[in-house]
Length: 145
Ligand SMILES: [Zn+2]
Image (cartoon, rainbow, N blue to C red; front, side, top):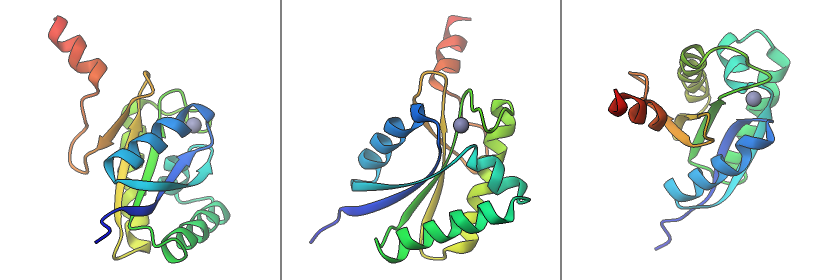
């Protein structure tokens, strides 16, 4: 029996620095062969604010190709440190990721939707729906105090 997810999906920023970390994370965590990349400038902001309808329709169309043609069962919504398209602070961006996850969940009933935060070290942190994750940097900082 093949338990591998052949394709998974990422709604990522277009920022070149976030591509490989997110691809590697998704391939490892979800045992995927390929990661379909849907990129925008600050997609967490676009989805959470829900004002740019044409951008949202475009994301939705590409997600449907990934879930229908590639049978993807996991979709990640990504936000990251130093985002040109979304200059909000980390706390705001993480809240936007949570809101964006809820919106994408509304499009797909049989798909797992997760939020990812790419931190200042370009490490990928899973965003919990309930509480703010403590990044590795913050943990190190806290232990020093
Ligand atoms: Zn960005």
